[in-house]
Image 1 (cartoon, rainbow, N blue to C red):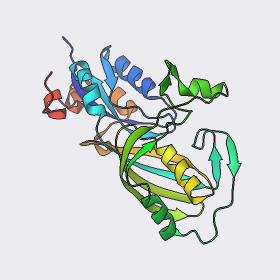
Image 2 (tube, one colour):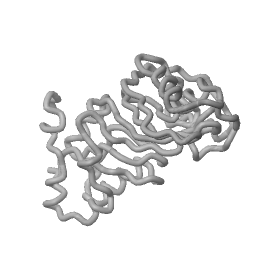
Image 3 (cartoon, rainbow, N blue to C red):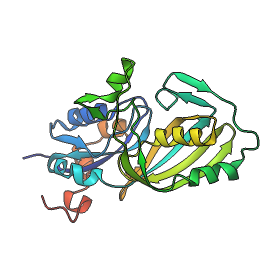
Image 4 (cartoon, helix red, strand yellow):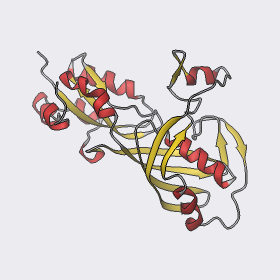
Length: 238
């Protein structure tokens, strides 16, 4: 019988992968049965919903939750990864007269139902091979667009060419692709420079702990941090 069962909210640091976090939780809790309910790229920080013990059965159920993100993008620069970690492939001048009002108007054009093309630099698999592995070999393959819904894309701050935003969307939405496509629509290109997941469903990053905090906790403190399966997913029957 596992000593730990439940949902653990982790505030992921920049630079590590979601898989790295899962491995650290396994080591810290000394338990193999650890999973997650939606990954974050190494560049991104914020809420990672970690599933421990019996809660791993909730993976698909919780992965379908809507997400809220805070982020930044810079206009005028396109990269091959659609974020600041990629190689610059194009630079264009930001249109004269582009102010916060006109930028928000362009952002509002992304609200609602739509199909989004997954980027080549992503973990999505085609023929069993992650796209990013093909992209690193200089290949570009045909991908199927995925259906997404964006309920909020709000400009919080604009100091051209940099912008700060908040975005609420359905699962599987590539936020950096939204930024990239926005740049295309404006006509100068853009790439995402920062991303932080604020919430996933009813879970919020303000209730999360860092890996370092988890590693310093006692067994009883970790148990208090775990959200019971029944509370995390009341309508889900194990």
